[in-house]
Length: 561
Image 1 (cartoon, rainbow, N blue to C red):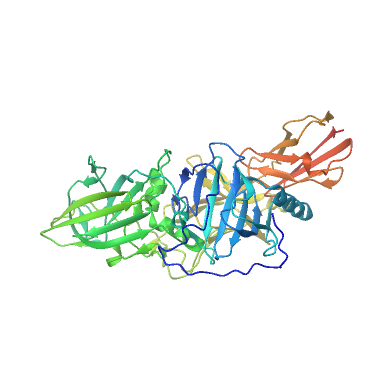
Image 2: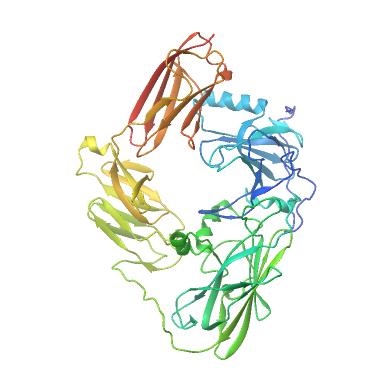
């Protein structure tokens, strides 16, 4: 680490064309060959993946190298999301991000712990002064890990532009071996409107695919009339890894003419939730199959390119047409799907009648639904289209449609709790009932006088739920009155049965100590190397509070020489 004598590095930006990003500026962030478990803009739950997930040989602790000269602009530590993450700003205007880290290098680790002890919080989000913490390309800035919302040891690596938009790091010369063609799992066709149909049906259909020896596919012939669209389930497999990753580009052609294109090069975090409109959300929720539409049905995503007629095609009677799909990975391995379409007018034999309810939602209007002690605020521009919503109330349970419709932004669900006693009011929370057993999952709940409310981007079933059970606290690697002179770490297990853990606080002899929270195994960990514990006899006290205010206290004595 170098401390600059000048207060700030002058940041300048260079405008690069779409295919003219600097190729030799950024170095690989690990010292091992790069093998990916996740690619850029991969389709994930409720978001596009914003970087590369680089395998770390299934173990934590590998050296993480700064990809180019720069200064640390942000350090964020959280049990959730990116876990321990570093942001480094570079003189060409880009920022690199390194996430799910096990630890920072000693200099940054000391800086972070000083901030954590100052704020008495494991969770911190700090922005060091520009130019204060500076590194040269290839310096070790951290060690890879599995913190936050990580499903296994790996390094999440990003490159962002000056507007904080993530860009595919492969565009900057980060080289990943990939010699395999993308794979197509399924193909669907959608009649659009009452006057359109496919194979005498007005209902979307799965089209059988016939794999060819060269890796391409031919779809079974279809008969259609009117406006139709397609959707595809496709993944890419890189060399040296068995993961099913996202593709780089999808293009379609109708009778030889370009029809639709989506490029996974760059996006903004603000638009990432529109992934639920890009995929067939109902199909995903019902069958766990993620297919992406090859048409734009009122989706504001910036990923769409060169679209004709929003990607739809119109099939006239007595015609023969060819629809082709070209799927490409970053290394230009291509897979083609060919669909032969015969335009034929016939009687529709299968339709689905739209289910109506007393409640019709206009997407461009604000709507308030109310029954009994429950009301729902649906704000303007929450939905992508108008529809009939299913709204029912039974006692303290709200049935708000099935979770098969994507939302652009949050709705507000309100419960009037004036009928409850003051004691009971303090133990109530709003839960989404999930799964076939209707398990109550805590939805972040706030209270205003006699109203409990939650903001959510998910339709479904919600209910008032009570929590009178306090969290549990159990020592994990020690016992009361034990000598811990040779221990590096002190570990405690914490859990909560219903509303979930809201906060925790640990002290030794009255002094706050930093305990790192790993929610994946319900563990709090204190590092004796922090130097806080200096006495022989030590009184440990841990207080854990859940989301409705129930708290538990654990106390023990331990000794150290």
